[in-house]
Every structure is written in C-alpha cells, then in structure tokens.
Amino acid sequence: MKFSVFISPKAIRAELSATTKEGVIAELVHALVEAGEINAADQEDIIKAIMKREELGSTGIGRGVAVPHTKHASVGKLIGTVGVSQTGLDFESLDGQVASLFFLLVSPPDRPGDHLRALENISRQLRDDTFCRFLRQSTTPDDIVQLLEEADGNQFGA
Image (tube, rainbow, N blue to C red; front, side, top):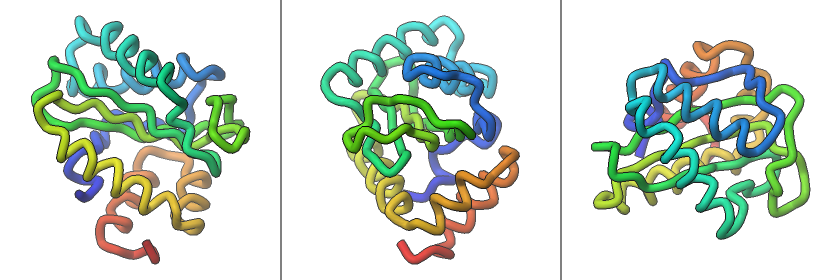
C-alpha cells in the first residue's frame, strides 16, 4: 500500500515540538484534526486509544522509529501522518534508543487488511537506511511528501 493512499500531506509535521511519548501522539493526532481528517470531538478518545495500545507494548520499533497506531470507529478510512523530531525522545523503544521518526495511523475497526498493509509498507521503507537518513534530514512537510512519493515510486532499495 502506497504512502499516498493513507498519509495526509496537510498533517505532516517536519519539526515536532513534543518531548514526551504522549506529547508526540497528541501533536500528531491534533495535526490530523487540523488537516480535517478526524473530528475534533474524537481527538481525545483517539489519543487514549493509541496510549492504550502503547500499554500492550511500545510501538517504538527501534532504529529511531515509532509507529503509534490504533483502530477507531470514528474514521471511515485508514488515515495517517508523519512527524520528525530533530532531537528525538524516549518512546520506550525496543532497542532503548530515542525515537525521531514517527508514523501515526488510525484505521476503521472493520478494515484490518488496510491497517496491516500500511504497517508492512512503513516497516519495509524504514528498513532502508537511505530513506531514514533523508527523512531525518527533512526540514519541511514538502520535503517529506516528496520523499514519500519517491518511496511510492520504488526509488529506494526497499
């Protein structure tokens, strides 16, 4: 599944200001609200659902990457965003390293296949060191959109 199918360009944040796990999740969910992808009334509930998922085990998958996600009945389709923290922060990642790249996903409960395909695409791209390096160096949402488009076009080795 290509990034262009589920990443909301208007919600991408190249310079996250949050310094905590919950802060990053809240900032990215709020970005989806500002982009018109989710309703403001559902924002707190979605944040709580993602934090509940984090209690099962951190979605900080290592190598500076975290993929917080949840299923929520308020969304009609899979939606996601990308955030980059220039300093990195403790996300309780599996390898103990700080996380600086974040892909946040919210999907409808009745579409588990879409959710899994998106997670597969994200993890495949994030195994590519060049992709991760360019993503960390991105300074604007437009830089990130261009990088995601290149990934969709198989410009990287993944």
